[in-house]
Length: 205
Image 1 (spheres, rainbow, N blue to C red):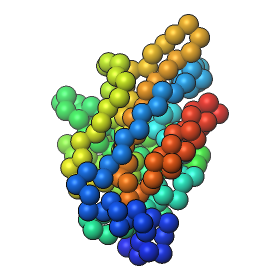
Image 2 (tube, rainbow, N blue to C red; image 1 turned 135 degrees about the horizontal axis):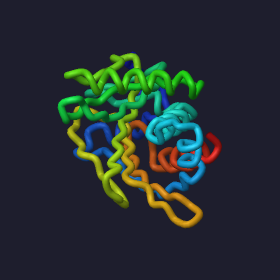
Image 3 (cartoon, helix red, strand yellow; image 1 turned 120 degrees about the vertical axis):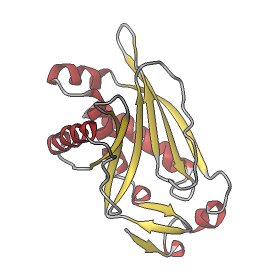
Image 4 (cartoon, helix red, strand yellow; image 1 turned 45 degrees about the vertical axis):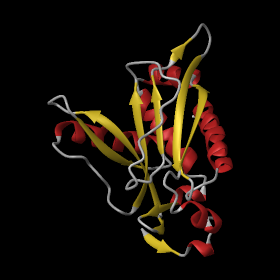
């Protein structure tokens, strides 16, 4: 992670407009077709949440905006991406853990399984440190939700994706995903393009 001058980036205007805004977060919600992803999960015996996490971070890797993030009052640049997921611990609590992005889905799956298992047995969250721009996620699979607006605390500006229980129809399986991001990091158009690419990744994984 390194500090960069916002004026040398495409986020210069957004930095001036939104850096000191009391509520700089934007939330978008889109309903996705995950029919193929659910079938892939069952056929290959892999976790659907792992596939979702991979699709999210894979789509994000195509956007330069995801490699920048406002931290404190500065704009920081990162070389690497990771995705954060929540796991249940052995004592009934929760931990979060960071999974580094790998283009190779098999390597990503190995890291996912190893790190989530470590987090379930640990008394602490597992983080990768300051070298990674981390995308947060939360899978609320006990219920069906249309949208979730995440809490903005002002100290964690990272993008955040939330999904709940999927809706299975006769032929299609649908899933609503809420995506929240800091307006300094990207504009609404960038967020919308990311969601469009995410749908493509889900269908072509």
